[in-house]
Amino acid sequence: MNGQKRSDIYPGRVVDIVLKKDQPTGKLTRGCVKNILTSSSNHPRGIKVRLEDGQIGRVQKIIE
Image 1: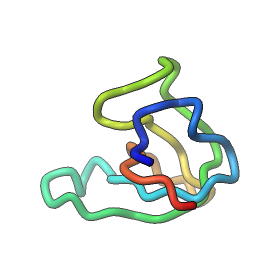
Image 2: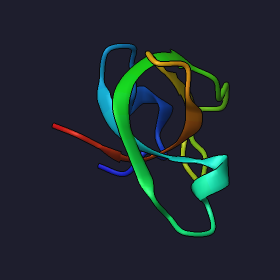
Image 3: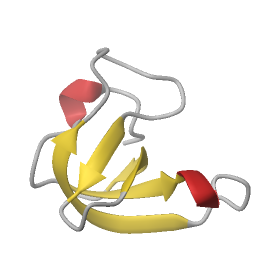
Image 4: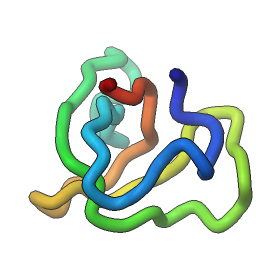
């Protein structure tokens, strides 16, 4: 699953996000979702989330 649908993401889910500083390179950061920051039901570049460690980025991949 890509991270474009808000309904697929919930607190506690493990995801790969791209941080703002890593957008040019596409480097992914793995973590556990703490909060969902995007209010719309979907977003073409990925739902923005805050991880448990405080990092913020857009979900690129949901880890099963």
